[in-house]
Every structure is written in structure tokens, then in C-alpha cells.
Image (cartoon, rainbow, N blue to C red):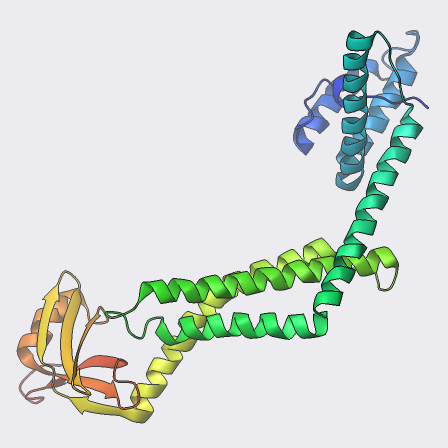
Length: 305
């Protein structure tokens, strides 16, 4: 069985992209097209070969298979070349033999995946493993949720990072075991042909990206809910401003709490502090949830802003 290195025939590198492959094919096809060279011996056959190579390399799935086979053949040639130089002999394999060798390697990998899944199932069933990992991820998520954007000044970043880390690790092991399970079931023919790589990677990326956004959204809602439903008004201990932020402190449960806010327009900060009375709205259930507000000292004498 004949085998062609289409990269060499098209005069491109093995890392060539779709556009480079297409341009190289068009350039050679114009030169060796049978209509252009009707009397040239072998031109038609060469044109068929490069056309077949272009069609194969243009198909992503077929290209991957071809690259694996090409790599195996080149490695075999390299090995034979070394043996020939060292021992003066050479043992060559045909393309069919190399394909058979690759199939055996793939079969061995498939068997290892099934064995790995069985070992994991024997140590801890997926019916127990998945709930444990979900609970671990949820615990890390809730820990971050309860700290993020609530206790801004006194936030312990070590424990915040620890929460994110435990969440990420739990999600990773969940997706990793899902990948092994789906692949093992596909190999054993016990399920539909799930795209196990795409499924597990998609779940991992989606959860990791959506988690921070949901934490921000939920905490914003939680803050507003606490202040609207359980908010009480207290006097601030101190108020100052720097750049575009207003810094303030207040006493709650015998603890001085320091906070800052940037919700007021920078060009109106001085007016707010000098013409309006500052007041702190604090959640009576979580005193670290607060909002700085201003009320008019004399509403009838000052224009609305």
C-alpha cells in the first residue's frame, strides 16, 4: 500500500493552517492540472495525488488521523535509520503494519480507561463520588459567597482563595471522573456515543466562568435584600473622602467597622458632605452589610441634585 507525505508534496509544514494548505494546493494544481499539461507523463496521476492530499488535510478529523499515522511512520523510519547505522540492518514495516500497531496501541489505551473506571468504581461508586464532589464545590462556593463584596475592609483573602481553590478542585475532579466514565461507557458500547471530551471540558469551563459572575450577582441582591428588609439607621463615627471614594466607619455590636463606597458622583462628594446629613443603613442581622446615605438638612433651601 503506497503512502504519501502530503505536506512534502504540497511543500508546506506540518503546522500549516487551512488557508496555507488551500493556497499551496491551488498553486500546484494550476501548474499540474491535466488540461495545462496534456502531454506530460505522470501529471494527471500527480494531480490526483495532491487533490486527495488536499481533501484529506482540509478535513479536520481526517487530518488528525493522518497526522498520527504520519508521525508513526516517520518515527519508524527514524528508528530503522538508527538501527541501520548501528547494526547495519533495517527492519521496515508496511503502512498496514503500522496502522495495525496504532490500533493495538489504541486498544491498549481503551482497556486501561475501562480498568481505571472500574478501579475508581470499586473504591468509590460514582453514585457517591458525584454527590460528595458537588457538596465540596458547593461548600467552597458558599464560603466565597458569604465573604465576597460583603466584608470588603476586613476580608480575609487567605480563606477567600481557599474557598475558590476548593471549589475549583471539586469541579475539576467531577469533570475528570465524568470524562473517564463517559469514555469507558463508549468503549464498552453501553451508551450513545457521547462527545466525552467536549462534554466534560464544556461543563468545567462553564462552571468555572459562571461561578464568579453568579457570586457577584447574588451578593448584590443579598446586600439590597438585607438593607431593605432588615436595615436600621445609625450615625457614622467618621467620614472622609479620597479620590473618587468616600470612606466611613460606624460602630456595630461593639466593633468599629470601616467601609468605603464609590456610588456617589466624584464632583458631588464635597456638596454631599457639606450640605447633607450622612447616615448609615446597616443590616441588623449582618452589620458588615451597610450603605452610606445622605439626607437633606433643609430640603426647601437646597436645590435637588
